Length: 477
Image 1 (cartoon, rainbow, N blue to C red):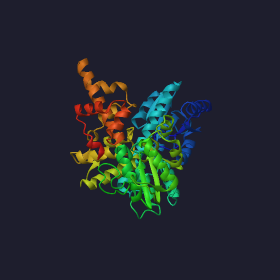
Image 2: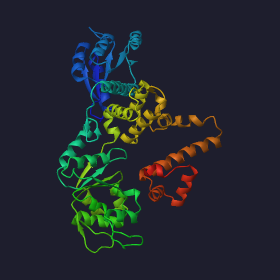
Image 3: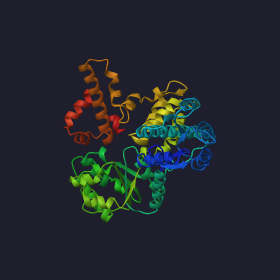
Image 4: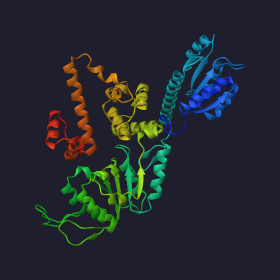
């Protein structure tokens, strides 16, 4: 799987008139790099292959009979200027390679070559090709009507299309569906699409944010209660399952439901009826149940935190939402979509991204998935001061430096001017604040659950939140 495009295309064309050299390079690139490789014994044959196959990277000898490597490169530019070309030089042809670099050749190396250097150069060239093509695609989207909008989904990547196809096939049924995926991948969007395509679309879908409600409140919200069922119950309350009668109910982040409520939920799925608190009779409900989670439920079952029989009732059909890393080819489309959305929302119709900002968005590893990308563009459009959104307006500099893909030393460049104690205090403060914000984000402001996940007492977590001035309300909204 290509980490840059999200599909199976990692194509390298090797052009050399020496058969042994071609075979050696092809074997190295296939076995060590995992690339798809085709060979050509001349520039003319290479052009024919390039037109039909559209390789990502081309390795070509500079000195060949007929068309030399420099002329071959110029012809490749007419086919697709985003292809990255690496020139191979022998004795006495280094000057030709240097001149080729001035005309746009990506890199060159001399024969005999070092295997690791070739693999590294091809990997960097592959990244360059992807960035150029995605940059071109983003600019094309500025001119052409947007494609790929499916009930709130934006994209055309094969993995996303598979999800859309599965949702379409599931929609007409009343089958229980479990939607799994990382935070920010669009699990609720999938549930709404499922509801919108179903025969229940005429009625409002009911959404329950399971981690946000304490156990006693969650139970009464789901199943309702009768007047006098407990202290303070001064009236009857209709539960959300009754509200969702003949509609769909989404149990968002169901893995956080307490075991006591899991037992009652199992009865709903088995018997299609609920029993409000304080009432002896049951109420039949016609509800399609859709559940979502970003957690490892199987691990929770092993720890005794989730009922196995409930899991099998929920897991009739699983829809797995792809991470943004799996659908990287859709990033330009998403950038264009969110830019257009927030230009309208904030009445800034002329706002554009700078080339540097686009490259930063394309290169970034989005650990928060589509939601993080959307929030970044929302913030940039709202807070950007000029007519162009520059890289500094994205406010990603510190995060990019500290990402796993970045050099580990970069994170500490910002504190090298401080003494040891000052540097340690600054790094620890930033880590603690980021850690706590992420913990609250995962639980949508549920302090008890966040404290349990962090392995600390609730009171200790509250003290830290006060010390770092982190407002719980920001995560519950």
